[in-house]
Image 1 (cartoon, rainbow, N blue to C red):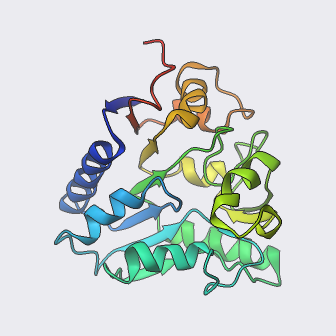
Image 2: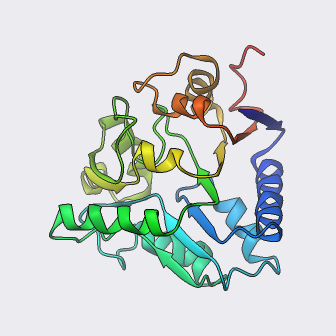
Length: 235
């Protein structure tokens, strides 16, 4: 892992934007994207730039199960609002939150990932060190799966909904095996609430109980932190 620490999230996000610039210049065509507050500054930098993604493909990490693509809190809505409506891609793929045949939807997304190997993958990290929606205990061998969200994840996401009861309890997510196939992974973590997860990811043992720790075994991971998220690191 290459660890980069910045004073603020905006400074870190600007450097991640330069990674996108470099990736496009080097011929990258497929980008794995994430949602949530962590990548919002990054997407602002991208949409304000002259970067051209008209020949690129985007595949999103996850989507809530039970929400339609036009639901205000769906990840499809988030991506259209923050990126796709302002910076068009040739193709964009997000799991179908209303899929009635779960196994068929998992197979569809796994096929898409096989057909579009990810050149550059963006990740955030949960307070319990989940990546995507791969909660603690997820198998490293798992590809796209339907995940039961832990209470801590539901509580953390409740701020986006009218009440905690409105937060979906399941989500489709790229599995750990799918994420680890990405050629280059950029993980962003900002804020004191992520500090323990960051420490466990970087300095703890590699274990499925800390899903992000598996990234220690990936050959090309860069971690972008603000000073608060890095505050518990011993080195």
